[in-house]
Image 1 (spheres, rainbow, N blue to C red):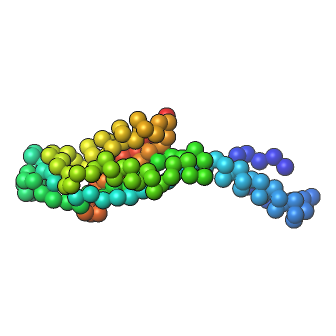
Image 2 (image 1 turned 180 degrees about the horizontal axis):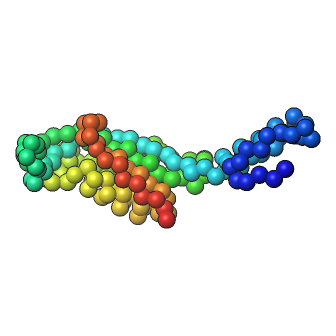
Image 3 (image 1 turned 135 degrees about the vertical axis):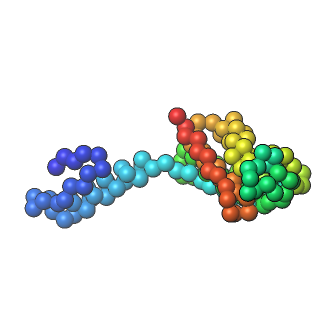
Length: 148
């Protein structure tokens, strides 16, 4: 009984229940092997920034103001036994922002995410990566960097 990839083949009278269950189990195992495995870490850091060219209606953003910037970083792993240990990965990323309150000048969430992505891609090459940065868990961005 031949099936196309991803196609479910229902048992026929010629196939016994045990054989059917064994076949289905093998099909599911194949699907699992095709998974893209990602870990994720989160951390937050206080920062001050501004938006000098803020449009009408949000002029207050032109002045330096404080946020808690929340980061969520997803990184592809190559196997499921701590390829990248996520506690150590989180600590590594947090250490990039040691030194008190971040002075971000005019940087947007997108700029911060892109800057962090450059570091991660240099240190963890050839992996899919996604980064979210938000202001106070209210508004933010998500940048994805597929390993092409």
